[in-house]
Length: 532
Image (cartoon, rainbow, N blue to C red; front, top):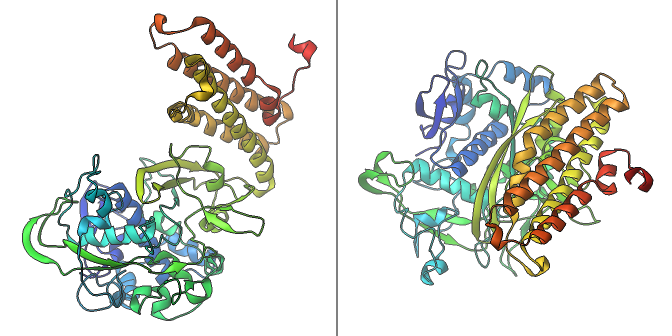
């Protein structure tokens, strides 16, 4: 199977038709019945396939400037044009057969084979199975997969690789990175297309240099499986730095040394996609000490945070509870202290117009070392904020979120005070309170952001801005009390201590009207006399 010439990517068209395409067919029938989205069997496969298409488009047709980007956004390349571009790359995309093989170690030969389920991040590892601890995700549920699912699983693992034991390297962005895609917002009358979703995440040649990689031109500098692996043993190996690779290898990084065994000929149904096939992949071989990428190589699709005073940037990862508007500033704004938004945002902000609303699609695994705790994904709006008001709007947005974070903390602590006489001694997980709060206030938050942008664009006065902040404060206070009552008053009265509940509620109200929260929102703070 060749991933550039065979049909293997599952998609849905505007009219609801489902089919498999090869990458060049992303623009087929574009004006009449365009492809709308990926239609993979698993959410992590969906995320991986978007990144696969972004990677190949970035590799073969990086635009020189914004004008060239706009040209292809307005008039996509034809299937024939893409086929011609991919012709030069197809030798790097054979899944099986002779070397080189897509994302597989050049020198490694099949030996000590492992079940193919090991390519799936959530599958129980060998030690978990040995200790009989696979209670929730059982062994043996994936035994045979088709070529398309094997290729996607391999790409998903290499792109998100978590810790895998001694010498089994994590991905270029660490284990389970946060990935951010930007796309047209879309509507029923004017749906977005798969082509635009991919193309909106392509950066210009100058911006690509922000990855910290180089302009090396060999095939192996782009696709590391085209040559023997640069291994990373303690004494004889090395760390791969930006000067060792081409810019585009960030899309094709290969931290794991893997080779998939030859397929077996057997009619049946793929354990992942459920499609009838005549051949299946059942085993693979792996070896430790694969490519160890330097921390200073950045991936265009991930946000980063400042890790130390020396300026080290580390990738942001999903955390328990998933994504909410508290994560939104780093994904949507280029002015976020201590953080760097995805590199793609730098170009995208120059392409935004008032008539082209965008959305943010963020996803990734929440990993606990080798264990996948959860897969999270979310969609949020992206606004066109003129540079002339960006700093003012960002400052106010920071205040909105700061106030929300304080109220979330107050709510959680008040509930614990109502529940327990010694809440500090209770270590149970009450994150569900926080998650409910963020979810319940999210739509109103974005309404306030829209109002702030409108006010600044129309040069409204301080009173208008304060009305937005007052509305937000009122929403936080009311939702906080609703949550308190929801979680505290659900138990029979004989189980509760009324005085304890009243005191906890009084503290919650007092803290939610505190000077600190009002200052975060830029609201006037009452004097003691006024408060009395």
